[in-house]
Amino acid sequence: MPTVGVKRDLLFKALGKTYTDEEFDELCFEFGLELDEITSEREIISREQGDSKASGASDVILYKIDVPANRYDLLCLEGLVRGLQVFKNKLEAPRYRRVSPVSGEPQKLFITKETAAVRPHAVAAVLRNITFTQERYDSFIELQDKLHQNICRKRSLVAIGTHDLDTISGPFTYTAKPPGDISFKPLNQTKEYTATQLMSLYKTDSHLKHYLHIIEDKPVYPIIYDSNGVVLSMPPIINGDHSKITLKTKNVFVECTATDLTKVLLRGEPNMLSSCSLELAYRKEKLSSEFINQKVGINESTEKIAQLLTKMCLRSQATGVGDEIEVEIPPTRSDVIHACDIMEDAAMAYGFNNVPHTTPRTYTVANQFPLNKLTELLRQDLAAAGFTEALNFALCSEEDVADKLGKKISETRAVHISNPKTAEFQVARTTLLPGLLKTIASNRKMPLPLKLFEISDVVLKDETKDVGARNSRRFCAVYYNKSPGFEVIHGLLDRTMELLEVKSARVDGYHIQAAEDSTFFPGRCAEIFARGKSVGRLGVLHPDVINRFELTMPCSALEMDIEPFL
Image (cartoon, rainbow, N blue to C red; front, side, top):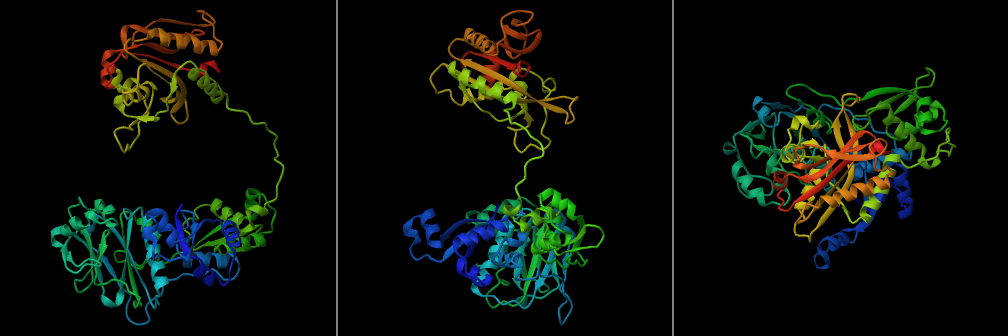
């Protein structure tokens, strides 16, 4: 959830009213926001860098306001004020439209085919007749940075560049060139650099070094020129110094380059893509007041609900057809995708604290999920038996559940991750044993013996399930010492069965019988049967298995399914 920092006095001036901290906190709650912190620039610097660095910093009160991650229209002071003013019925929701310049043709941005290799999409807009103050300028730049960090995914999906239109001339060209062929004076620098030199220069820059990887390994770098060959920017890294915005800027040229066309179209006011003009599109949705009343738990008229939605910048009106409401979604509300999003805004405008308390229609008594209850009871007694509980990742590598255990991956019924980000997380684990052995490997310096256990889920393919897989709750324990300690693991099995109230008997109890398993030492493996059904195995691990997990001592292990004992 992004946090917007605004100066309290500027905020109250724009709202036209002074609030106490408690009153403004309540207003934020009503509007679906949260006043996270009341602080100052001096306090922030003192907390993060020490008192010595805070000397000379401003004592102006700052409000840190948490904004929902999908409300991009509220990421600046102006957006917050507009939203709150409409919510308080002090302002009508503005209507956005693209207008042609009073004199001359609209600006054009042409995209060449070379950009397809690195960053294929771009849109542009012009903001005219702007008056910047220092506060407005700071808010403008901060909004751009907030968008970069959120929907733009740290510039990897979209990069936004802003320029003083009066210092450049269209039409503009978005192309891509080899880094050695690009040369310009970047923002706040005193001389020209090639793109290759810039990459080296910014490797030590605390702000820009995080974006270099986006294009660093590409054969060509994206670049935007004006009609005179002046470089506007090399997205997503840096703008040119020639067209930088100042407090004297009156007309702003905005360019957005992207790898994701959907995201770039959510940003502001596009007017050219390749050679096709784009409008600020409004759309209309229809839903019934009964739907909203039922979901929120209220009983309001169609007209009243339309008024509530209008307070949330969603112009609405009753159509006159039954209880139908027509809702107009502005281009700034990309978060409204479904009728449920509209219902949520209606609930917010009504006030969550105003929703009447009702008695549930069904009477139920909560109980702990039986499998979890059994798990918790076992955990307590296994710890009392001298074993230490471990908690490992549910994902692991193919090698962990197959090769290292002496098995083939095709035999494991493992669920594979389609696009694993790392070799350590390729499949869902089919056994708890690798995780415990890796835990021991990471704690080899601890005094022996090491006695660990884990009770968690494994995931197995199962064609009878609608998702093609199922979870299975397993119990696994290992004993690592200078001697195998099979008797310790066998004793733990007996204690576990005693806790589960399963007696030692072949027919209606439990017993073990010799088995062969590539994970265990030949002749030192047994299968566990409970009430005639195989529930697990125990034994001394094979030396090859121990070596593959970088261990040097003998190890005994037990793993069994606990679901049959419910």
